[in-house]
Length: 195
Image 1 (cartoon, rainbow, N blue to C red):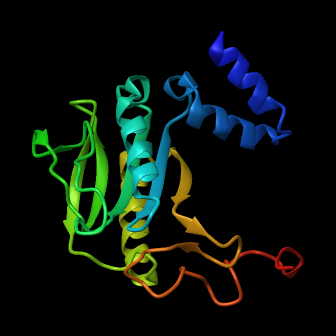
Image 2 (image 1 turned 45 degrees about the vertical axis):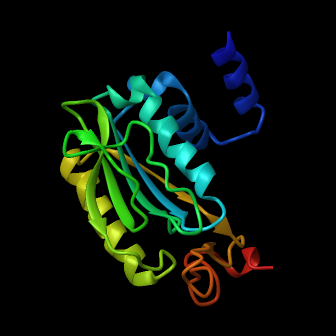
Image 3 (image 1 turned 120 degrees about the horizontal axis):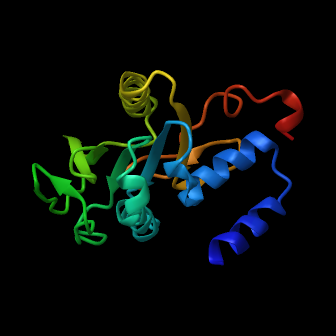
């Protein structure tokens, strides 16, 4: 009942069929029956949005249909607040080397463990500015290669979480000076979309 109602609301937004398919796969249990999906998430939580971003990661972990699906791979970049200014609570259900992962304020790459059906810490890096083009490039190079190594036919669903300024940029790492932005706005947008 709730799923049918949610699907009805989502359909009312007039998505294209491809967009609708991606939205339904991301939010609904149809992710289990869909074509292979690599969900790449770039979460800049080193700011006042940390609590919401932690909740997003916990929701992915608690979605047992997705976590137990052989056709769903989440790959997550996560930069959390420094413990002196934000929460120092660990993320519920996040694992590291078979144990619950403790709080960490640096950058983490998270990846699904298919054998265990869990989300695990794949890599830890020191504190850095998530808005840096070099930091972003390093993560996306790893994530996109991991997607295609996992399943060369997988579709990639990319999500950015953090502060945004529309086409002008994304991010908002409190350790950085500004949002990441490509010169002239986000690359790939035509002049007519830049206002």
